[in-house]
Image 1 (spheres, rainbow, N blue to C red):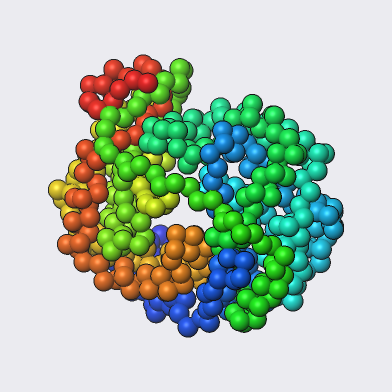
Image 2 (image 1 turned 30 degrees about the vertical axis):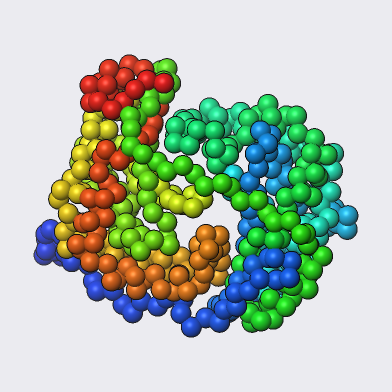
Length: 453
């Protein structure tokens, strides 16, 4: 039965904000049994025993860089056809075998790596591994499947390239990194259209390699047993060559924002970016908290200013992007066209204010709680822990980093956050792009630091 508060009860309610209740006991992913090892074929395996449910979660990351101009196109088709048939199983058999053990596998690719994610009942762990091994060593990438997926990708890319967010992302990547392979997040439709099954099979044979790759397994299996079963299942996946890593990115420096005209646009996409530090840097905890104060969550200064107070945008946020051998800060906002310049003014203002007016004790306490709480929530399930561990392990870290990070966040002082704010959020450090109607360029130019494409 639903009950409602009476008018007299509402009238007795104290007005104004009230303090948040104290946090309860914060439990991190401590005490879990872990094995982190490298198999004979060069594959790094991290197995974690987390028996919250009788399942296993698997994450495989294969470095997958390439300098060939068609690499991104061939890689996309490869990922789309990896699970469509092998010498032992057709597409239907793969789906059926996984379904019988409550499992699934999915493949995706980006400029850095080929990723395979999956899960299954713990009792079906061996089946999951067998299907995985079958696809890694025996995927057919048949003419029919390649043709079907190639045509689908061409249509999808054509639609995506018309989206303002995609236009802004591609412009930002080119502006930051030029022709570096890291910028090829989406291949050209024309390149995908000429991909052949033979090219896909050649890329698979030469690039889907265990040496230098990472497999994370989290679930209701003892780590030593999991590692032994993985080693046995993947024994046939071997090569003397190593998977190819992307070369380091050039370090970002501040500069003009590039204006990219989009005639008739009713919205503008603003993207600002600056060099940051990776998770391995001792300054990272303070940077993480400073970013949250600026624009990293809903109660941040940026959101309060340009969304809640001025109503310039519905979407405004800042984040830390992790890149090969480094990290960058990214500030994003999509605004109505007629407030593009005012929104940029306020974004820059909040960057400067963060260094000049350091976070208050209340702000520091709020973002610390948020950072710790979201990390603990994200690592509280098998799915979340597998994904988080794969993300940090891909950059050389391990389970100990995830376990120890709440304590590192708790130890950061207000002075350290203020110093991170001055160091990383100074407006002259930033460059970026603005995509919008050309009629807004005179107003943006009046602010300075904006040039036309």
